[in-house]
Length: 310
Image (cartoon, rainbow, N blue to C red; front, side, top):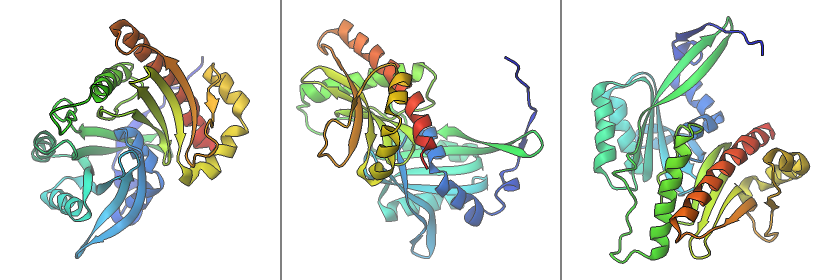
């Protein structure tokens, strides 16, 4: 393979976005999937410059998995106390559970502040610090990077059942998804993944709002699965485009998943299942290996297909 090395040079983000409010924020709204991929949340933009008293939040989004609000605060410079205070004020006023602070550089004090918030608030709240970099590639092309500086501590923020008598089902699901997340991240195919929760599903973003990989764990029937989950809000566009390429997609997947099994459901799925025995540790490991394998395959295939749909 003949490949050319291209010289890269880090440049100021203001070379591309001169103004934070009028240039960068509108760009991020149109490319919210870039941030979704970085932090592992299925983000949907609710509004831009959302009023909060005399001020306005840069972007208000929603995490489609939890339906919780996310405040995104942008800063095309090194962090300062003003933006830290505003991000917390906006989140409290808008009842957001997640704050994403994007800046070109983070001071040690602000890193420690977000780390402290992640370690000392309850499991419902999450604080992300994201460094924005811009790299010049060749003469007239630039490459943008989001680097995670601070993230929620999944070890400290383990989801706990509020009752003393946690069900065997939720115990099994939490233990399973914890192992799944560890195995998935160990592949180095994903830079981040959700905090495990004691529930039926574990979502992985695909880079487009309204469409996710929704892995499943039916603890009672010992069935795990990988499925493309298409929400009703985008099904009218996504479903016909995928159906037109069903043969090519199945070939790329190397299997024949079940396409849209529930015709009456508003949300649509393309799913593949695996029967196991979740009470047998050896079988659990086999199921995890199978699910990680097909999560990667489904992600590789469907992320390309979804991004090609206009």
